[in-house]
Length: 326
Image (cartoon, rainbow, N blue to C red):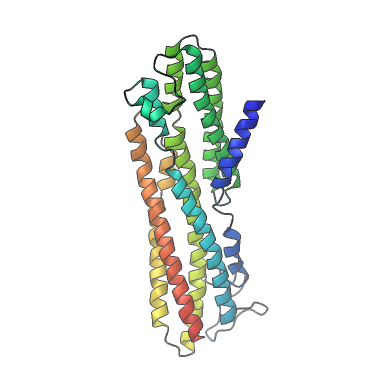
């Protein structure tokens, strides 16, 4: 009972830091109340504006209302981007823990510096080694419990990615729980150390599972943010077109919006296929192979984040210019 309570408490604490992405996405969706379908540039279910600028009756598509909706959406997107930043920053934390655990279990010369004061000496007795390994299994189980909470709370995960992550967390939880029972029943230090190595290389919770979860949540949140920014872009294009029809010079704003579209295309291209490739990676005894598998996804998600940030800047600058002209 005490162990279950401790695991639940640890899971809730970690989950509080994992569920940032998607919580603020709803503010951006307010754009739809005066915004436009991203494929047609029109109000969903309504005809496109006529050549004279007419729109469907009952929908507030005034320039002021459109620009206000853009501002609302961008504020919400800024908050969602903060959650993406957190996921990216957290992905690297603890990434070397698996390697440290292997050093201790192998009895390498650097084990003392890596393991910390609670680690048993290489010649410690059976009970000490059981406690060492089961404690580290418990830490992984607590991490998996926290990841489960975070996956359940991530609003932008695709159904496929959610199913994959949920299945991985469930499978690893079952496997580590069984391994814990096996470790407690071992009768030799050598067998316990073998269980400890299995805990590391067969699961790679810190080097692989945590990055899988973090970057998948971040990547799917980025994809949703890109979609919202495309709606912002389309709304600003409509405003620019309207003002150009009134004889206003919107060449600067059109250039900013063209750059915004380019940045969104670049972010989309950066993410293409990366998350699915990472989710397909299996644990490996080679820590360098794990780092090599995660690295391209890390680069892609960070690059998409930077392109999104640049697109937001373009949108804000275009909005300010169009507001001054209206």
